[in-house]
Image 1 (cartoon, rainbow, N blue to C red):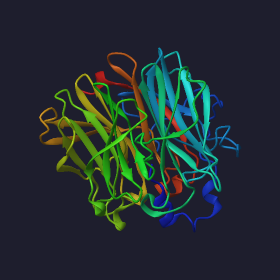
Image 2: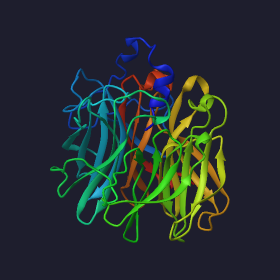
Image 3: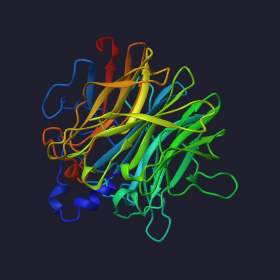
Image 4: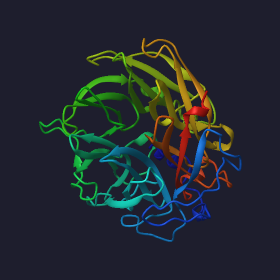
Length: 408
């Protein structure tokens, strides 16, 4: 998640009033569920979204975010493993990079009705100032559960500059006991620091991930046969002036690889309020040694994208920009067009999830043939703060169920 640019531009002059409480719901430290207020800015949720509610609440006085839930909860992911649903999210005092942060791993054996805390992964204490931890994503290697995370220096900068990102991983056989954080490398002594790995996808025994370089200057494809040792591949997109970063990979049934590149654009466009909103559409064919980027989605910048298929249809959950006063939403989109042929694509919005302020970064797992469990995070919905204040304000982890029978 790239909040550093915005904080560097706007946060430092803000008063401590921005740290006021933001939600009236409560939930236990283990991640038990409570009913949320629903809606977006007071509007009822769409009819295809069932049981939307707060899963992890921001109402807390906790100050130690390395051991307990704090006021800013974000960066969710979900996975099916060992017959259960698994959730991971980051907790901290705010979006600002800092060592007072951790990842919390929870498990549900009742289809997401309740979650029980299994482990807490603290941010690294590497001297002199420690590192932040964020952007966790699950993946599975053999019989073990893995989590990728990004560990960065506690600095404030534009475009992820000077954060010395360490893309790191942990793994576990039971979800309770985890290894120490290990930095991704090529196995020959080169560690892939300064590369922010995004979501990891597996195809035919090979793992793939994009990674954007510190400074948000380029996006590169990496691959691995064991999920630990990674080889650097071709650039996906390397026009630095477009500020490319979080890039979601999707493998099509034909074997084609689709890469959706978030582009934050020029200095004036970074907040998403003015100028262009764009997502670059890039394609690659096996063996994925080159990319072509012939088109883009105009007027939609898909921040923190998650893609998934349901019944042959390709959906995206991402942050949406309203342009007005830096307000954001988390929305569900569908990508249509010549998908398997790598041709012209279109994007349709199905609606907004309950969300406001600092929001998005979703996880999704199927519940049955027509329903998918989804998680995301959001600031206080009634306040409907702008993104800038939202990154300093409390945020909650939300959950809901998408009923695809209603998406016709």
